[in-house]
Structure formats: structure tokens, C-alpha cells
Image 1: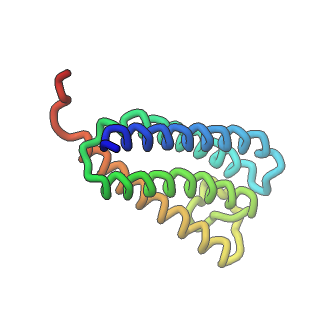
Image 2: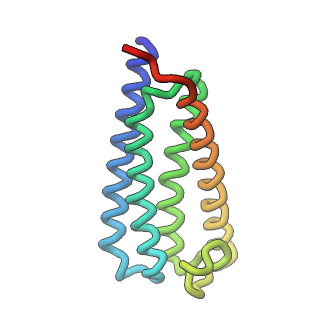
Length: 149
């Protein structure tokens, strides 16, 4: 199978997972009133919708990236990890009433147990690193002139 077909298939997977995350973000919006911290619940809703959109856009441009197969694989998993962990961590903080140490405005005074705060801190820091690396790699992969057809 040639690289072009593999890239198109991976792009479709990113689009599919992006629509799924967008859907999960919409569902998160429905449960906001029952969360311990509804303010962070709205953040979780927005994270799901925005990260789902990010994955869809990434899937659309995926075939245009000029990267090695290994780099594409790493980028795929970093983007998936970052998008889903961002949504999941924010939603978990809203459900647990935690997140004060990393999201003081959104947490609005809600403080979780030390373990809860540590898990949320890890999720937020690790997702941020994953998405930043993803963006740098994607920018690098979009270098050069477009091919003329």
C-alpha cells in the first residue's frame, strides 16, 4: 500500500475520532448542571467541541504533511492523546470538584484531594506538551511549496 493511501486512511481516522470527540463535547454540555463544578463543566464541554474540531481539521490536512511514517505515527498518537486527555481531565475536574492548583479561575475555589489534584495536574501538563509538539511537527510537515498537478 502506498504512503498516499495510508495518509488518507489516517486522515479519515482523525476525522472520525474528531467527530466522536465533538459529540462527546456536546454530551458534556448536557450534563453541566449535574456536575460538582458546573463552571469547569462548561470548560469540559468547550474542550470536547474545540479539540474535536482540531482533530477534524488535522485529518483534513493530514495527506498534505511531508513527514516520515514514524513521525506521522508519533504525531497521530500525540494529537489523539492531547485532544482526549484535555477533554477528559477538564471533565474529571468538574465532576470531582477539583482543579484549583492548575485552573484557579475555572475551579472557582473547588479543591480536590491531593491525589485528584495530582492526576489533574499531570493530565493538563501532559496534554499541553503533547499538543504543542503536535503543532510544531504539523507546521514542519506543511513546509515547502505545494505540488503542482
